[in-house]
Structures are given as structure tokens and as C-alpha cells.
Length: 197
Image (cartoon, rainbow, N blue to C red; front, side):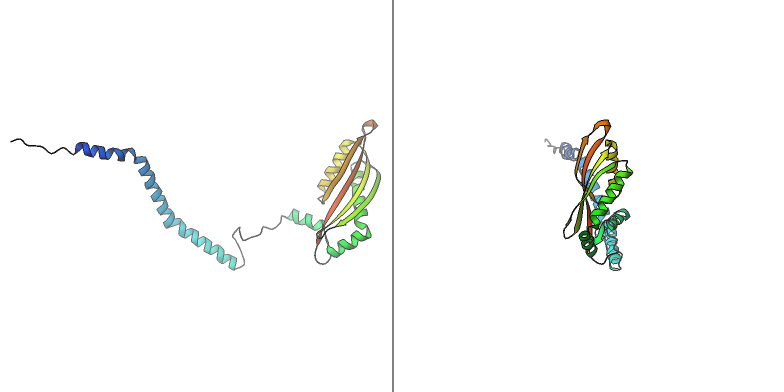
């Protein structure tokens, strides 16, 4: 009698194990992802929740520590600049109607030009424009000096930390290396509500 041997299971197992070997990097990545997700859920999520509760509790006590809840204070230099370039509303109205702001602007510009070695040939106070939040004062000067001195004047005005706006600057060369420049400047004052300080 002939016996028929059952087929061996060897080749079947080999073909079944081959796809697993082929995808072992993906399976290892999936295992690492599962491990990291579990650690995050078990360890870090409760810590983040406690941190948010503490921020909320500190805010209830008057010390908001969450950066989204706090308005950053202005730097001291900005606060000082705003203070120097602002007037109380009543004071702004009074000073602009008296002509003091315009003559003060001419005096400041002429002093800055003289400090840079520039001769002031003519100066004229300009008009005053008021908006709900600002007062703009204008002045015109005609200057004679060297070009480098005019640049030095612009630098001096910038370093004064006043809110100046150069509306017009024309430079015409003269003999001897000199230039004649005409400058129209506006100075802006911010209006503060409240009493004069």
C-alpha cells in the first residue's frame, strides 16, 4: 500500500513569514508611535492640564501669567518719548492758538542748525493743524552750509526723539562747496485727554 504523505508545511510558513519580514520597519515605527503616544497620554497630558489650571488660578488672584492674557508694558524709552511729545487737549488748543508751538518749533530748528554749523538765512513759522488726536505744527527754514552739515542736522533732529516729519527738503549747490537748502518740517504732538501735566 502506498502511503501518501501530507504536504509539508515548510513552504507555506516561509511564504507567510516573508511579508512580515518585508514590513518590519513599518511595524517597528507603529510600535514606537504607540509607545510615545501612551507616554504622552499618561505623563504629559495631566501635567499640561495642571499647568493650565495654575495659570487660570494665578489670573484669578490678579497675576495673569499667561502671555495671551497680559498686555506687554511699553518700554521705558517709548513711554518717555510719548510723554515728551504729548500735550493735554486743553493745553494743545491754547498753545496752538497762541502761536507758541510754531515759534518754538522755529527756535528749536534754528538752534539745531546753528549747532551743526549751518547759517539760518530765513525762518518762518507755518500753520497749525489739529485733528482729534494730534496737533501738527509746521515751520520753514532756508539754510546755508555744507552738504555734510545738512545731513548732520537731519541726524540731530532724528536723535532728538521728537515726532518730526520732513515734508520738503531741497538742496541747491552754491560756489565754494556750499549748499542752500530749504526745509519744511512738521512736528506732531499727541493729544492726551485729561488735565495738563
